[in-house]
Length: 459
Image (tube, rainbow, N blue to C red; front, top):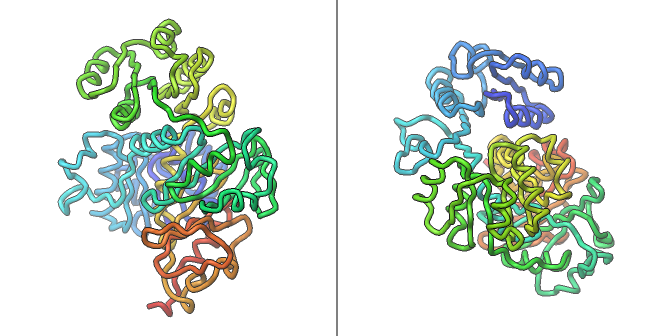
């Protein structure tokens, strides 16, 4: 595909890296010459310096025959205008825009939905994606990552196996005899940062990062096999009342006891007016006395969600030292994520990886319903829809053991209508099944996409 990416920031740069490695024709537009040069030195891409919304710059980038435009600059307005020009002047088929400002996204404004509105085919709201991601983590204490498939019918969960878990030190095949009424599949194991494709005789060791897939109703039961099941969270403290902090408080305040700390007084007043059951506190999240006063030692989750990575990390470390049970920290700089996660900080949240997963869903060939980036881009989970019949498709009408999957790829589950079917070798894939795949080697993406492309015989 010929793809133009507007914006060479963290998301634009990471996306260019993902897509360039998959043999796409990528052009990146930005005003930052040094950043463009750095990307071009590292990746096999074209770069164009200039304002992303200027018709002449888009023309120079090859917009006349582009398949897709992905607008992820720091300006909502530039992203939206670029999409307008992409359709009006260049007729680019697919236009994706990142839009941050909540006011643009209000349903009653409908600026993207009508024929007369702004022609954006896919809207990406990083704040909304990150909020939902954190909310799922709060719903499943002890999980490192929780991913929804088929509208949440099935979930892929990553947990760290702990000493004392019933399955730790045993073969994976023991899980079925130990839990005969619950069907699940271990999709992958990361041991000391190295991926393993699990087999029935694979023994789970303490500190393994285990990815398993199951129907939503069975997730907590399976988690209890790998670690002592943490008690449900009740008390949440959110540091930072920006877009993400405010959205998270609003979405969980009816189910949890929520306190929100914000240092800007006028923002505090606004939040206090808009939120119903959240206690809004004026102050700094790294104020030791304030945290002690608010009973940080009894807090189940401390979420540091300001725009400042260093402030988030320091506040999280302080909260943990003062007795917070779990700390989740928003970190924009990818270099920091590996440094801090798993130490004092329990879960580092990367907005880039969350956003990139949503973007890749719309870039993948074939009928792909969802893409999730795992372990900060090291692996990928994919929800692909199978179409056709045995003649026209490489997967439909075949048992899983017959499918020629690329190395490092496993099928975890199949969603058929409202039924979640955990993948076993003799399970036959049918037309319109949603197939959940796990890839530890992302260089195999193109091979997986080809498996789900329908031959001409189907038409």
